Image 1 (tube, rainbow, N blue to C red):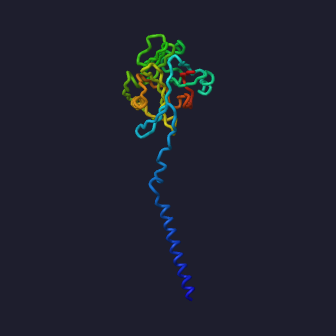
Image 2: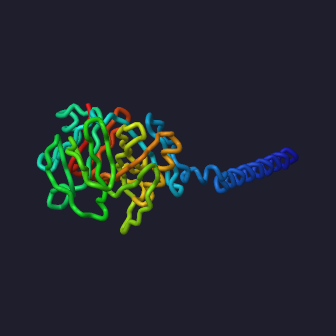
Image 3: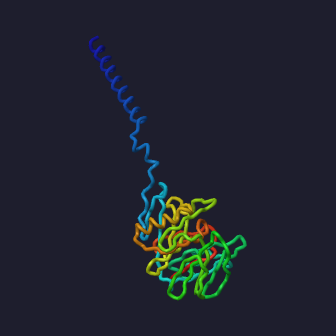
Length: 261
């Protein structure tokens, strides 16, 4: 009988151990470390790209990619009749850099002044939003609020103006929405700077339009690129930004484009 009592005792001890282990495992499943619980809210690591920085805008990471070109190397073309996609344009025109131009209307016309290779395709309009002009005359690039007083090789009307004489402008925008933004700017050494503002996780989204001047100002301080003047171009699904380091394609055809070989 002693051996039976001993055997029952061993079974009892074993049962206690199993019960303890099960309860311990159950506790480990239900009570998770804080780092595990919060891991889904931590953003994925951003990809390091050349000529690209990331700036937090109201806790939203906005990537800024850019490219700088000499004014004399840039051509401007209309795409309203051909309605070509950027991939085909890049091949046909041998563009190493391809950036969309300004806005176009529902009637498929340029919204404002458009000059390509000295030919005026569309005349300027009065607009509170499209209140700026970009033009290249010889080797000089200009961005301002007045119609060019010369006969430029290329010119485009767009807007709004974002930067003037090295300072950000205050914008008041109705119905502002987050969208990918494309900007053309002039540097202090007379170079043409193109910038794209977008989110890595949703490349057709980006900052609000009214935020752009201050974001450009932060970019200027972070990169030490001296920007004197800047103007907003078409954006969102009608935008293209293709350089040696980044490729952002359109969802719908662009109305015009800048090309540099």
